[in-house]
Length: 169
Image 1 (cartoon, rainbow, N blue to C red):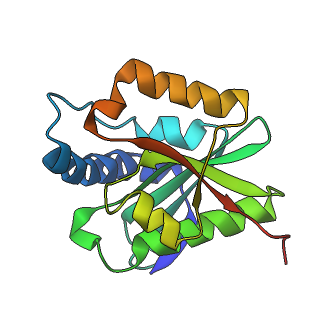
Image 2: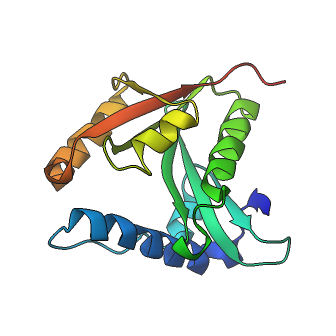
């Protein structure tokens, strides 16, 4: 497996991967509806970075990690691995690479928002070094407000998690 920065040519794959991965969540939570993923071009153009995992250097993306950089904060906005490639360590490798890149860019922590009880959400991230924390910036409190407006908590408790980062080595 190779992890690299996303290229414009990866944009369609990002949306395809996220939509496929979201099917697992939809099948678990049974919401009335679920929006399709944001276009990959939007993710790539956002402030921050997108890393993709591929089977080999020239292969198509099979997973990605999107980290927003807002208010001097690194926030893991999305992690998705296509279910056809799941349970092989790609998600963990993407998280580790995202944490390393955030550290390299001078961040002292990475935050995220997720479902507390979904096995591949909060329990997975806890195994990657994230701990439940409280929103402590306007951006993070704004994410809570957006989740409340969208009613995401009707499918389970939402939590913020933070991974502290040591100094770049």
